[in-house]
Image 1: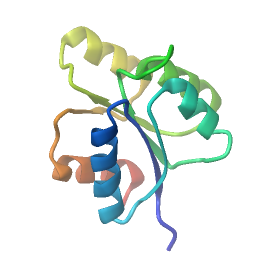
Image 2 (image 1 turned 90 degrees about the horizontal axis):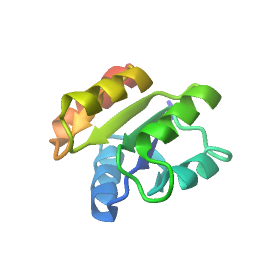
Image 3 (image 1 turned 180 degrees about the vertical axis):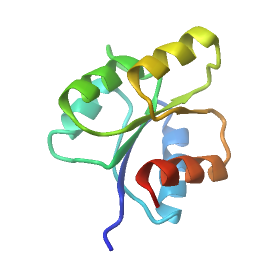
Image 4 (image 1 turned 45 degrees about the horizontal axis):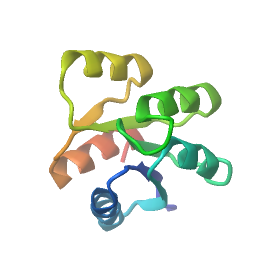
Length: 122
C-alpha cells in the first residue's frame, strides 16, 4: 500500500526536521518541506501531498493563513495549522480557513500521530 504523502511548512528548520522525522517514523512520506508560502505554492506545482501541516508564521510575504487560503481555492488538500498562538482571534481565523484543525506548539508526537491519522483515515 502506498504511503500517504505529507508536506511540512514550517519556518523554524529544527522544528521542521523534527516533524519530518516523526512523520517518517510513523510511515508517512514527507514530499517537501518549505519555510515560506511562496515556496509552498511553488512545490505544489510538482507535488501533490495528501495533507499539509502549515505553520501560521512563515518567512516571506505570505503567512500560513494566506497560503492556506490560496491552497483552498486552487487545490483539494487538507491543511492542519501549527501554531504557538492560542488566542481566540487567531483560532477563529484558522477555523474560517480550514476545518481540519490545528496543533499547538510544542506538541507531543502522539498528538501529531492522532491528528494526521484522523484526517487521512489511517
